Amino acid sequence: MARKKIALIGSGMIGGTLAHLAAKKEMGDIVLFDIAEGMPQGKALDLSQCGPIEGFDAKITGSNDYADIAGADVVIVTAGVPRKPGMSRDDLLGINLKVMKAVGEGIKNNCPDAFVICITNPLDAMVWALREFSGLPHNKVVGMAGVLDSARFATFLAWEFDVSVKDVNAFVLGGHGDTMVPVTSYTTINGIPVNDFAKIKGVSESRIDEIVDRTRKGGGEIVGLLGNGSAYYAPATSAIAMAEAYLGDQKRILPCASYVEGKYGLDGLYVGVPTMIGAGGTEEVIEIELSDEEKSNLKVSTDAVEELLEACKGLDSSLA
Ligand code: APR
Figure 1 (cartoon, rainbow, N blue to C red):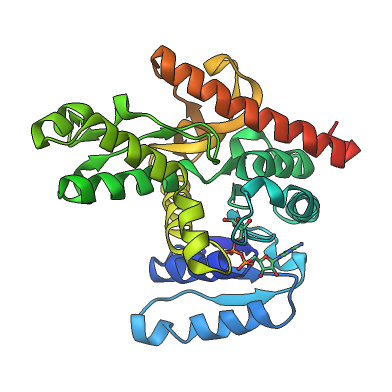
Figure 2 (cartoon, rainbow, N blue to C red):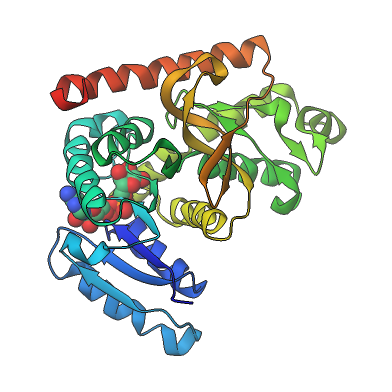
């Protein structure tokens, strides 16, 4: 059987990390695409030369021509600009919307059967716009945010309780912004509800609230520390988990920015919800019971996403 083909649109910090992870895992042959000339070709050469050391078989190429992503099985999109200190994800809207238009057309013309994972921010609006521009079915276009946000929440909880991260199952819903909704009622330490575990460990409710707040601002904390650019190791790792779920028909339940129509009282919006990913793409959005407080937090978050969609429609009339 021929190897799978993975196209990475955007070969910057996340794109390069994605290529390295995908090659190490032998997920398929990899095309690094970017508008910057030479850079994706250079990264592809550098990464190819890891092969003899790590022992992976993967053909890694760089390109500035969309024709080279033809027939890709998975496309992961990071094209655009990342945040600088002091910027919110929403500040990236205008510039990254134009990028999504070019990328959407490139996908439509070259690999309309691919499973597309968007990482570019502001995520919930960009994944919606990318879907609109590409014309792909909604179940084949998804945004990566919840896996990352949940991993951040899990990391902070594991540190607080001094337990293995493997035993923390954390849950974050809503938009990928400061209004995201870390849901403690569905967060467990190997099945033990986090609030019960906090009592056992003598950790106060206000401390859990602080961890929730740090999770919400987790991306900004890294932007502030890096001084130039945003997180890339964990975002890339998160998207690779989603791509593996698709390629392996794993039927994983992952929090993703999926298209929600009807469930959660939403009407045609991309937002972070538990989603089953398998060979059919996003096969099912799972609607879970939420408390009144969680529902109202989710509403704040989805209202913020809706505002961004209106802004996108104002910027590009083909979206209206
Ligand atoms: N087509 C293809 N590539 C593009 C385009 C375009 N129209 N515009 C910009 N790029 C490329 C840039 O040349 C750059 O190499 O996208 C790449 C982005 O890489 P980085 O600047 O290193 O950004 P990165 O950290 O990888 O983040 C990318 O993901 O998490 C989000 O907020 C983040 O939106 C940002 C994206």
